[in-house]
Image (cartoon, rainbow, N blue to C red; front, side, top):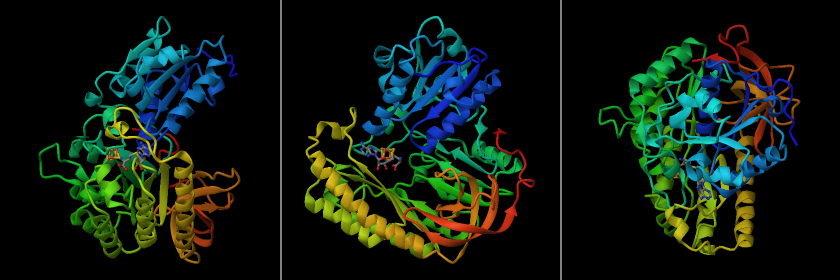
Length: 457
Ligand code: SAH
Ligand code: SF4
């Protein structure tokens, strides 16, 4: 049970974010809108008078975590707290959420974000569902409160025009809409003026940026332009669709100093049969050519991927093709998922015919193979110097952590580095997923970074 403390009704909010970086960034805008209208941030869910779950529905597990969180809040029947749901589950389930959890007072879509303060007030009277039009959502112009002073996420497009057979994203986030280049670049200029050194450009498929704008500007152009912004030190981006990863993008990655040596390139499967059934639009041979072209073009690039295990019809042979691709490409990191059927996707009509035990066995085997490759990749860095943007407390709560240009996690002794700084560290050891380092030099210290911790912009 989570009791509401005395500070309830003084207008403090708590946002819990589930899912991808796009959601994490959307939550920065939710916080910006609420602070603009006089709310303050609560230190914990217990203290909040408004609790917002910004949700994900890409896999059933992600949804179940949200339902579980709602059950916990529902146990506190006397609470006057307003519970609001937004994000992908809001778009997908709408008013159904009220039926399942009557404690929820407000279900809203990103298109309604500008109206959030009024919606919260009105929802005290009766539950409200305001999803607006997901294709019309323009949240980039709204205020944001960013956690870090040195790193920022910047969406360059919203929605997705692909129809990967397993994926619910296009139906909850709408068609691909690229932001105007001028808007992106002026946001970048504001960020770098405020001390930001690193931006991560976000989109479901960044590589098709600009296609819907009908102008000359494409992703290679944008990457070059962002990388040339005054004060910009590191530019990362995700996600790249392999089909749309042109040589022009690799060239900018290779030549622009600020473009980081990191490429997240989801393969999803190593079997041509499964790739076709997934409607991914490339073959394993094409993927491997892109991956090796990237490795050749961009010195020291770290390559990561996503893989789905147990897609409908995946045979042992298909799975072995995936294992073989993983062993050949030797990803520096990989994120693996058990296939999760999603209503509204084209694969939902296919029989989910790989038994769960079999999916789990394949997953464990793949994870084992990849973990050795990741370990070897991390091991090669031991002894070298790396530039680390220090993000905050590490998972163990005792160390501090940050990321290298190639997106590896480096764990540092807490007394050697401070959050929101840029340091040079020597890598002393490697674990299964991260590096251990020791600070050699502070490149940008706490006093030099302006607009610390909570940057409004
Ligand atoms: N636009 C990005 C992110 C999509 S969701 C991209 O194209 O990569 C992130 C990852 O979740 C996907 O890459 C995929 O590996 C995984 N995923 C998506 N739908 C899934 C499903 N139904 N079951 C299991 N994994 C899924
Ligand atoms: Fe989903 Fe495919 Fe679009 Fe990624 S590219 S969001 S996996 S439909």
